Image (cartoon, rainbow, N blue to C red):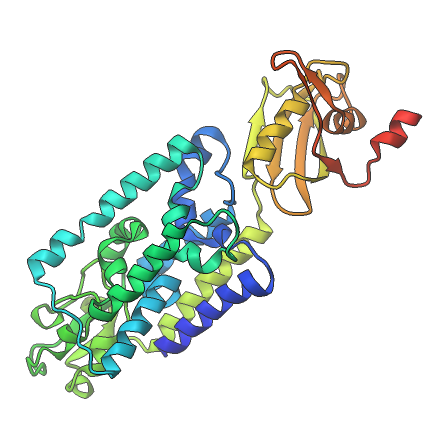
Length: 390
């Protein structure tokens, strides 16, 4: 079942990226972590991100509260590839290195440093700095000009490392794991071991890809548990309930694996649906206080592809020449390909929708820079040449 789910989620990711030319970065939960502070403090997101990152992050957090870090074990492309490499080498009789428990614990702190560095540099640069080293980006980037060879090096190192180590990136380096761990620690689902039927063979611990000593505890509450259920599968006493998976002991005995499938699919589907049903702008700029009576105009703007272009658009709606918009108050943007959505709020007694369209499309002279700025924007259904002719 796990292999099938991994295959389904990996196939959907690759199909969306390569089959439909989608931007997978807008559906990465870690993107929601990278962009959260900037969005709260400034009202905008780094380029390539969208509010869909927040929705999918919320879905993953709910999954984690129910199933612990099941996202890592079933949905994450890097976790899937690392797991498949390790299982393939195991079939070839290549045994992974046994990392001493003290060293495993020390290495697990590395991911906290990775998270701090990534978030700090992202905020300072207002760009996805981690993209240049992101092994997942090497898989989902469609290999454009913005990818660096470091991403391929890191991805290759993870694949090679997975031959001799079990899921090294997931255990020691993944910054998203730091975010998920507090939620996973209180997660509902857990592995339970019954001392009365346990054979004390230790197979459950040896099978655990996250190196959790399952045979030493009555309930696995470790944050790194990915609910892979491998410990249950290898247990020779599972028929007698030696190792089971389900809610805490006080809430019931066990759950069928169908619960895991349903939670993963429901939360993922709900996050995607919410992103489409309740879209919120990924860039917001305001000027002054909103009066009682305002109006808005919705525009389809070509060339409004990212945060940088949204910033550029503010120059045109805040211009101070012949086409100055005295009543412009607020700009909300949903950057993207094609005719991206832009919503402008204005005071109707001072300007109107036609004036806004002219301001967006007409060039203006930047007195500070001493040069003309030509508008890269086109508004769907609006011809500035025809308007000028009238």
